[in-house]
Amino acid sequence: MILEIALLQVRPTRTPEFEEAFAQARPLIARMHGHVRHELHRYVEDDHRYALLVWWATLEDHTVGFRGSPEYQEWRALLHHFYDPFPTVEHYRAVD
Image (tube, rainbow, N blue to C red):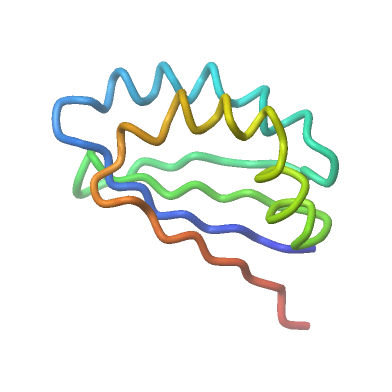
């Protein structure tokens, strides 16, 4: 299993709109092949920062399947204009 972590910096004053848009975007990612689960967390000390955690069955389920899908285009249209700067996305595998 792969854990995707994206640290999201949302433009000031846009957090309510971002959270509404994210609620609309949730089903897009949730129905993707290989999606296991996801969580969005707001940073306690700065309410414009979030951590998006997404668990995927394989790396390719995210990098090829999701990013190459029509759902990703909808995801982008809903969410990407809120970020400044654009987030770095990293992938992790559990250490046994």
